[in-house]
Image 1 (cartoon, helix red, strand yellow):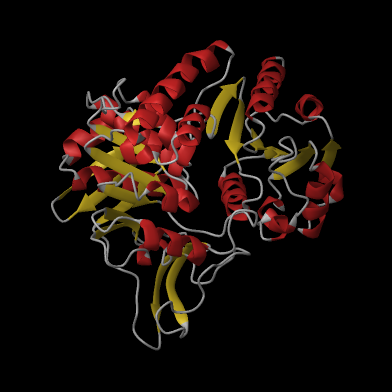
Image 2: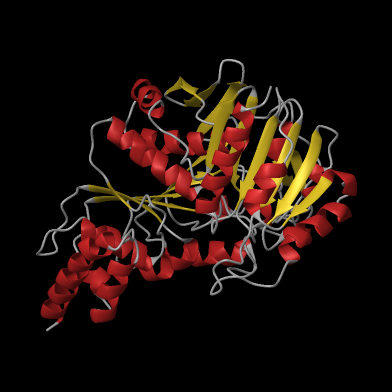
Length: 456
């Protein structure tokens, strides 16, 4: 009976895919939902590729997942993946449905799945990755989890014991996850810009995770990312197996090394966050036996997803649209810090609005006060336009951050904001958007590009 139910669920869900596409839907979740509704243990029966890689973590998992797929494809390998970002049980089930024949047997030998951290307990009992890459673990939306250690505990309890972990050695939360599993660590050597005291509002690990003694940072990069040791018990950050160094922004390259060699890699995006992503990916592929010579070529084919970051230069104006996940204070702080470090004068538009999807938004705005809006209180930031349903909330937070009210414009409509924001020749206009506003972001970009073309 279970086999009959499974096959019925498989065929019904497969049939739904072309139907959804005909109606203009992406079919990234719904087929999996159909299958699970008909056969609750569907994931137990569906065929899986022999080699599975799981990418999880608080921030960067979509970017890392898709860059891994890009690199596999550059090597000539066909990969099954959920690269559209549907990373819960239904999304991964949908990907497996698409990658199976009518009898449920897998048609691919390798899969790369972005995996939501909280979904691990529903996925990993049936989908057992050969490698699990954890980008980082930070404080996330208060609607999703209470603390990064809570998420680390979910992963520790559910990652299969056979999975090898690729872990951020500069993140004392994720690098302690699933301590019994085999693991390697990646990181980035000390930089001239590193500090010894945290300048961010959020630092998620201030005491020793072993003895609760005083944790002392040798250096800090941002938030709790850095190298630390305990003055009481001697606990310290792990040594790297793979590390990035000699970051050259003029030549747009970084050297990534391990005990068996090194390679000079072209930087795909110059934010330190994305350089960490690159180092993690090289660590994964090196563990799978690829050479640095191969990987330096494959990395040239890997790209940051344009819905996450896109730079257009028009008539001397750099137009940057960047995802800054609303309700995630850390993700937005990293985006603001990136803008702060951009050379030249800039204007900023905030449209990280989370009120379009009424099933998933919250009136709770506490996350804004964990977010480093203070980074925008900078002389080179000449104007900030706040727009959309959260416009007045953002204005209030900017005022608390010390931004002069004369710099702030309130435009409730995002397109009005794009029509009125100042464009500076030789400078940048930086638009931050949320996960619910990809479509309006494209319209905003079109308006800005057209206005830039007409600048004299």
